[in-house]
Image 1 (spheres, helix red, strand yellow):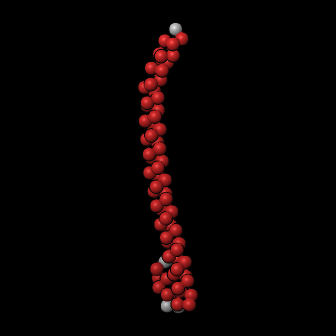
Image 2 (cartoon, rainbow, N blue to C red):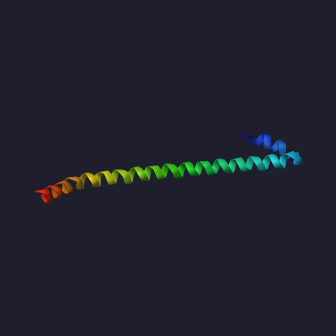
Image 3 (cartoon, helix red, strand yellow):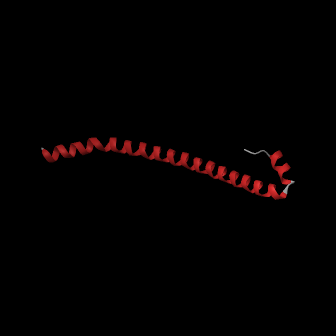
Amino acid sequence: MVDDKFLAAVGRLPEVGTPIRRDCEEIRRALQTADELEEFARAARTRAEHLAGALRAKLARNWCTAESRAADVEG
């Protein structure tokens, strides 16, 4: 990434400095957005794992009941 000293030096040359600073700012915004998306993805993964665990537990609790009912119907 471009450091602030370089940007300050380039800023003294408006004909090239302005487009370079603009591009660098766009890169910073893109990186910030990427960081935010990564954080959102981590949170979504954590939530999905929690929901999957809850569903597994619910299925495990109800499986025996479902098998008993099926046996009663067959029996």
